[in-house]
Amino acid sequence: MSASGEQGWFVARYTGGIGAQLAKGVRAFLIDAHYGTRVDNLLEDTPYRFQSVDHFDCGIGRGSTGSPLLLMNHWISANPASPQVAELANGHDILMGQVDRCTAQRRRKPDIIAVGFYTKGDLFDVVDELNGVSIASS
Image (cartoon, rainbow, N blue to C red; front, side, top):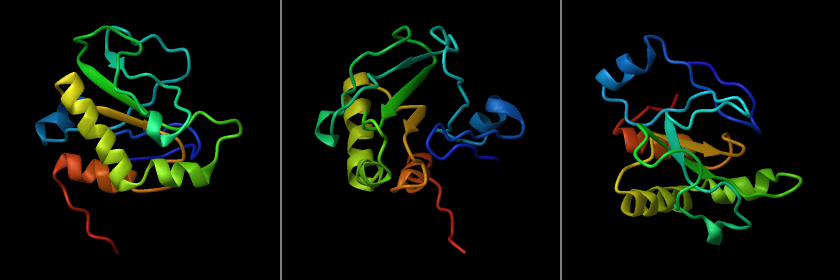
C-alpha cells in the first residue's frame, strides 16, 4: 500500500485489485479519484462542504443513489485548511459518529471515507474498526 498527499486524498493501492481485497473481507478502503473524474455510475457520496463538526451531513451529494460504492465526505471547509481542525474532525468519536449516522440514514456503511489531513486524528483506527481488524503498533 502506498500513500501520497497529506492534505489531499489518502491513496491506497492494494495489490490484487478491489476484488481480491473484498474476497479477503476488506470492507472499507480508499481509492485515488483525481479532481474532475466522473464516477457517477460507480459511487454516490454525501455533501462535501461543512462549516464545523456540528454540520456533518449524510444526505445525497453527487452520483446516483444505488451506486455500488458510498463515499462519505468528512472534512471542514475552511480556507486555509487547518490541521488543528482536522485533528478534531478526525477524532474517533466524531468520525465514528458520522459513520454511524450515515449507516443509519443511507442504510449502508460507507465504502470510502474522504478526510482532510489523514494523518491527524484517528482515521486509521476507525477504518481498522470498521474492517474488524487490529493492527499491532510497533
